[in-house]
Amino acid sequence: MFRILFPVLLMITGTAAAQAKEALEATLYKNPQCTYCEGYADYVRGNGFDVTVKPTNDLAIISRKAGVPEQLEGCHSMFIGGYVVDGHVPVNIVRRLLSEHPPIAG
Image (cartoon, rainbow, N blue to C red; front, side, top):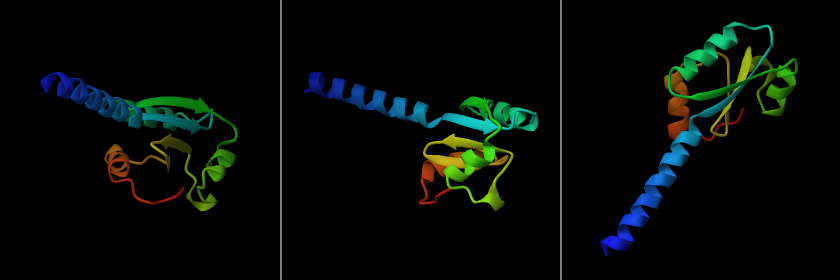
């Protein structure tokens, strides 16, 4: 029994760990001239997230395609765990979003 159970538990644990790591990966699109967004990316990285920064001159287009209303667009758009986070949102709020998975769009 142990011979079967141990590999299954190992597979489950490995899968959960992989999913947890995947949930911490983020892509942040920002205006190339904005230095505040680099600071936010560093803040998010410092809190355990793996952030890829992609400077773009098409931030408004990217945000709208992601479903962010124009009046809610921030200085950057961070894509993480199936959500788009615009602006300098505190990490504890981002973690709560990822753990609770509310049915929101944008």
